[in-house]
Length: 317
Image (cartoon, rainbow, N blue to C red; front, side, top):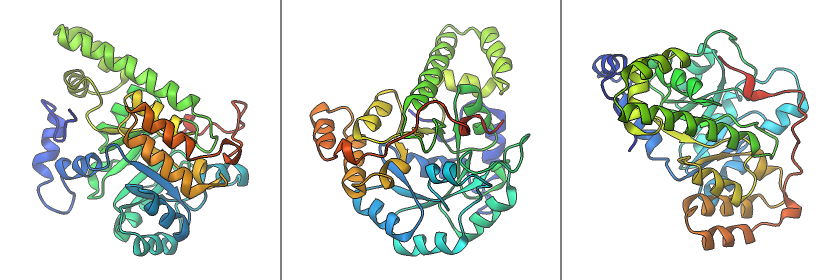
């Protein structure tokens, strides 16, 4: 079960007691919002039309960007948060939660997005990092944050900074799921090791792991007690088909992010609906098979291989 309020973690306990006022929000509300999105699909969108397609297909939320990840790769230059007008237009056009991305470490972009009233902020490696040494201290915000991680150490450090939701980094905009699978398997292996030492009550080994991961002992203990991350963890990066989504759910993800894989295909509405279906019923192979029949592989985005000039997953601290 996901921890909504933390357990035996002085940092989290202090945050609970200091966040009673509505100015900064509480752990319960922030993590609880993310928990409500479990088993769902969050879709990247760049305009109102894409947002409406996502809502019609059954997406639990949309993530507004200026460009889809594959377009960021193709255009080069500096990728920044989306324009305020398009974010507001999307907010006004759909009834589901609206998220938006800010650059890593860009406190002011995050403050502007919070002021605009988005439901969640993604401190994202898809955009060009603003700070190469620090991420945003997310406890200072009312709005919950989602962050990416390619290993357990990154995930726990982002949670310690106040992230209410995590996602695999994968390799955005490629249509290739291999990196997302690699990141989730690595995280699962490290969590299994911590859980073993927690069950053995080997505090010395847990302390050694906390130093190795450069995170707090209390957060490592909480992860071992839960046998999973203390927050909701979605898959992201390269998900293109219903079977891709089902695979990530089988690996232990709580839901999926998808963007380029839908809108760079020739059948966006059908593909979006199929991915939603496969995510929700990932444990029923007959339903996943039906979802896979809803798409035409010839209409899928071509995708990119492993020889990339830019590896977005390497961005961040």
